[in-house]
Structures are given as structure tokens and as C-alpha cells.
Amino acid sequence: MTSPSFYRTIHKREESGSSKLRRIAKHLARRHAVKLLVSVAVFVLLFTSFLMMGTDASGTAPASATPQEQVVTVQAGDTLWTIAKRFGSENEDVRYVIYLIKDRNELRSADIKPGQKLIIPAV
Image (cartoon, rainbow, N blue to C red; front, side, top):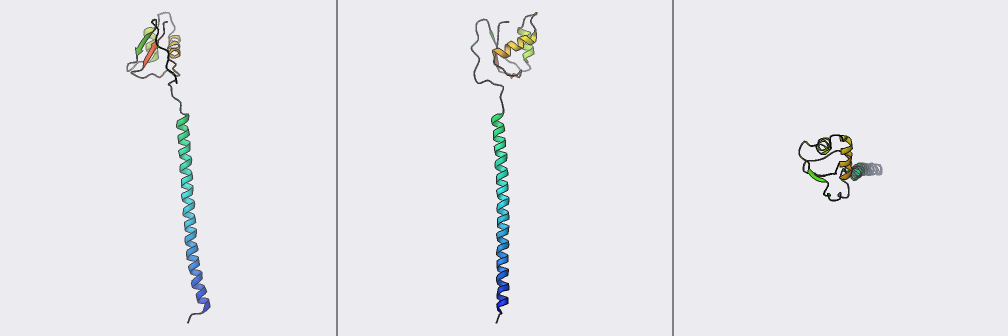
């Protein structure tokens, strides 16, 4: 026959085993919660940074070209400088012509792409 103290020892061992499993389960749950929290934080950070990223395109299209203005399609290798030199007069400052082209086409930077149409104002 077994003594009551033996029963308590077995019972305690079972409790300690199950409590150990509970501790492991809580630890794993915390680790998963931390991973989830970090993943959500990274997602929110990336999402907001993409929303805040600006573009060089304006929200509105420039007005149609007038008869005094020319429409030019940007070719590979073209820059605003080369286009301004091509369409500006001899005594006109190229930087001023670039300013006029950027202003007329509502460009925020000097970046242009092949195939893009630019309106060249009358200089």
C-alpha cells in the first residue's frame, strides 16, 4: 500500500509538469504576440511612408497649348537644359527658359522621361 506522502509527491509532480506546460504556453503566446506587434508596426511604418512619398506629377494637367506655344515629345537623352537651348533665343538665359518650361508644364523638378509631352512657351 502506498503512503499519503507518496500520493502527494506524485500529485505535485503532475502539477509541476502541467504548470511547466502552462509557463511554456504563456511564453510562446507572448513571443507570438511580440512578433505580431512588431509585424504590425513595420507594416504601418511602410504603409505610411509610401503614402507620404511624393511624386513629381501635379494633380492637374497644364492647360492646352496656345498657337504661340509648341508641344515637344521628350526623346531619350533629352534634358530640360538641351530642350531649353534648342527652343530658347540666343540672348535668352537658358536657366530662365528652363524655369518657364517647368512653370508652364507644372513640373516640380527637372526630371523628364522619354515619351513625355512638354509645352514650350513662347520665349
